[in-house]
Length: 592
Image (cartoon, rainbow, N blue to C red):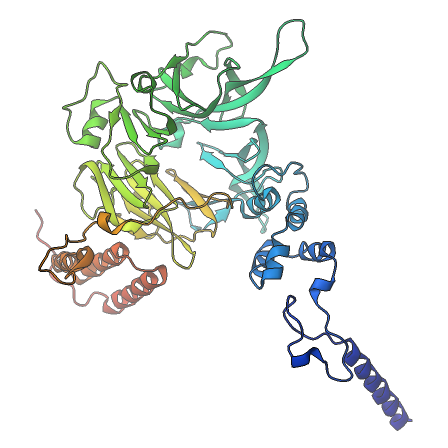
């Protein structure tokens, strides 16, 4: 009986194997035919089945169930799958899976693909400077958000604006952990603050304690002429309390005026609101924040800013501001400055020669070698990025926040040669941050200046040059912001936002010697030998072995190396420093 049962099982298995031979599909590229010459298949095997024989709708439906990362990888295998994976039908289904409530796909060449990738890559990450756990965390992700366009942290909460014009209010709250303990968690609850928002701003100072109110530039439907049912879309500025999200003030403009950006400048009692129109003109109005919570109605005067009155031919593209200065970037890449206090003027330009206390709105033009794309404005220093990806720093350098390797102030834009093509730039009170991308598309965060309070993770003593911070950067990080308590990074990828950097011509390269008639090949292109000699002199000036190790780590951060190479050198120096220990340290320096 046992032998018969075994023989029956063998017969069943052989029958199944014969059936499988007829069902086997020959593996080949979907867009290619059979690999054997003549196209004849071996006896006993069926004809080759190609994916191209399936209906396109069926293939798109199957691919739409893959994760976004796998869809992108599949589209890079061959020309056929590249066309299928790039179809809008695939991305429409993926977008409905990621954001079921999203009805409008927006505008652009590939609207559904753009919407799907925006919602797949959206995220707000933060790392607290204090406490025991110093790791990167992710905030709550609003399901109604259509990507993340901009964010702003305040004293207690975080505000996020999406690409559909919805402003979200992310709250801090007490939640229970997995162990049953009650803990205070940052940005773990969210509500919709308002819709139809274009831009928003708050107190421009780096300390979030001063950010009491939130100014929102929005579009609202207003009733038309009395006796008619028509309505008009008018721009307005709504003021909300950051602590509760309650609206306390609203001002509406004429329907003929359309704005696209709002920034604040000045003190609370004389808060100036600067509004940028679609035509590139600047308007301003002054409000008193100390009286906003009083239930009364009054009229404010909207006037053309002096930069638009004196220079009517200029078309301003964007603005940046802090408490006592404003920076304008034109559509041609020019930069103009307004400085309102003598102290900040001296820090930025090194002199008070051209400062006029009676005419503080007079714009000052900065002399720059190329077109400026974007900027970052701190309290008394600034950073500029031109069309070739070069970074220029200017202003006070007491803590090394300019990243030039020293602590000498700069009264004019000075290039930071070892950094190029940044993704984002941020300037704070006395430190600066740069978000850069390596050749392998990995992101890293560099910082310089004061490191007190943990604001430069991994460098508590600070650094006079940009060094790699010990923090994990999200793959699609696009902007950043730092407060006294926390470091924030916004993750979002827009396929229609391509890098606008150009290749630097050889004639404009800094450090390239001028050609001469009797000269052959360049002896030192870019001044590499001179820089190495300067690095050696700095290491030699360090009194102890530990100081020399720390200086060498800084020098590695200055050098134009790949991210993997920098990590290798830093890890090797850490190993040598731990192995050396206290041995090899020289006598302590004499006290002054």
